[in-house]
Image 1 (tube, one colour):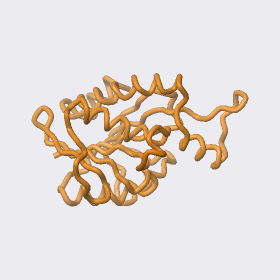
Image 2 (spheres, rainbow, N blue to C red; image 1 turned 90 degrees about the horizontal axis):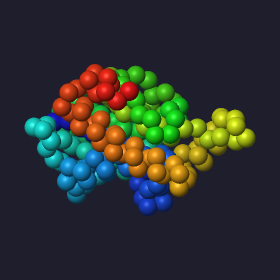
Image 3 (tube, one colour; image 1 turned 60 degrees about the vertical axis):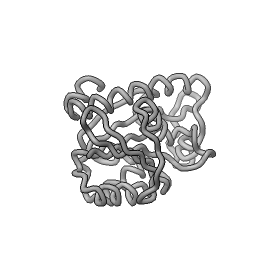
Image 4 (cartoon, one colour; image 1 turned 45 degrees about the horizontal axis):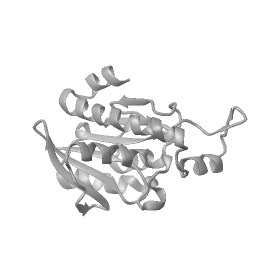
Length: 192
């Protein structure tokens, strides 16, 4: 079984926020493959399905992004899923809007949700897909203050950005399928 986790914040208020791009990508993937999030376990909404012979557990933690590790660790332990069979999808300020990067492991890169997962699992050796949301701009300069970043990730995409993100969710769904069929290295070669 493989565990695919999309990060985001629960509730309609946050549904279209930049920080919820992980939820959105996973929801799109689930819809394409007719997997429904019908159950709750380990503080997450989950959907179970099968694609190309792989049994899948899709999860959207409802712990809020910064505490995602609690749900991910609980699900991984409950189902006995090895780290190599975990895939996490999340937003990344350091990638341009709509760009994606797959990695077999690594640091949190300052993302508090990933920091929570790495801490809860005791390891950073699990595949991930980073989805670019870009950094906020003010008169051509990047905002770097913590308040500016928090406001930025908790705001919705603009109309123009939304068009880019809709296309990106489709690309992420392809990348997930490729990861399931070919593995992380092959998926990195194709999508990075």
